[in-house]
Length: 607
Image (cartoon, rainbow, N blue to C red):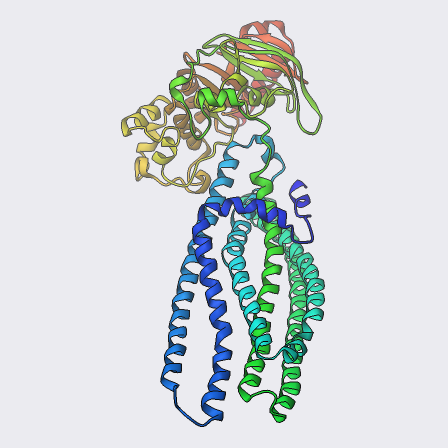
């Protein structure tokens, strides 16, 4: 799958990638600079404390005097207080930056999801997208706000420690820091291993998120097919992979840390050995020796932190590459600059410049192939008059849904053009068409909330009177008023607290509320009972009056009043006419209708 291919990214830190990413941190440039200064201050003060401790030993302990102790204590306490303030600024500022960057990236990513064409969603699991929008963005913002700033602290502190050590005793500093070259080699080796291990963990985590989503959304199917045990085994296998990969990653990390500690201990031992001899020979003071011992311990703390930061950067880079593969995804359907300048886009529409849709539609020599290369339509032609109702009939895979998807500009023709009122719809913004479109699906989707909320989704500025008027028009008002809380009744997730017919009527009301010029019904009566079908048939007659409409029909009884019925086979129109004309031809439509009529009458008699 495409989403799994995207898990394979660079195995080393790509600094040019991070440089480009800093565009998203640019709005917080001042905060970052302030935070860097604060952290540099924290690092400098941390490096000064061992020096002050050594000075205290030489001046007060060794000399056995308290002269100047008050001044020394004032300086020491002042530095402690400054450090407290610095740490407070560091935590609050970094926290705000983290929250703001996560917000900005999520907003940009969500905006991209709104404008991506349907083809993008064809091969992307919901769980995969959720992982990008949640855990990956969290990892990214956390690393930028905390990791890079910690790097400033660590780097500043290490530089200060090295400078102070050399200023105290050059020879002892060289001996003590002799462990740095092997530490650098070992760090590079282990960080590559750690990156590979954690990248595998992130990849499996995405698959687990997808599996969670599918198992929860498909709970009813699981129960009806008695798939509980098989699902558990599949999920157990996936989580076992996660456990093994996580243990391997942690094991590698756990080997690396003791090596760093060992090298740090060797550095301390060298300081004790050679420094102790220096003290015995009166070459080095006790205070200097104590300072060196403290510095050898203290020096490896930022080393460990920076090693961890590099590991986080590598892991976050994997997250960043996945997030920005979404943000930088090319749009298959995109309005050109000329169109957006004149009419606006999804987020900044210029409605005052939009021409009114009359409803004349023409498919002109249209051909279409999906990304798989399979050709669905070839030189398809169709002219629809304003207010005309077109019904599309045919077997599965004949091209009915493709025609409707092209009409709605969810996809665009590979060849040819689609004209609205004589103008190619690519010369108009997508939102212009979509705002004039009423679409009712075979399986209507309702959002969590009340019935009123779901109907208002069609027009957020609609009044209560508008909602009731739309509901009455589609014959939904009566059943809504019979519910306990009427229009304030909760529909449940996906509308699961309502019947299919009720959900269908609410989706009709939602579409009607927009007062669209074009209506599309995608097998809107195929999943409901006969009684509800009669209600919806009446609804269809009222709703479609005066509007150009397309109906993909499963139950042919719902399209007997259509102005024109097109029988589609392999992307071609093999029969065309109204119900009476097609029945008189006694061709494909006649056989299909007759067989369906006999089947339905048989069910009635048996019942």
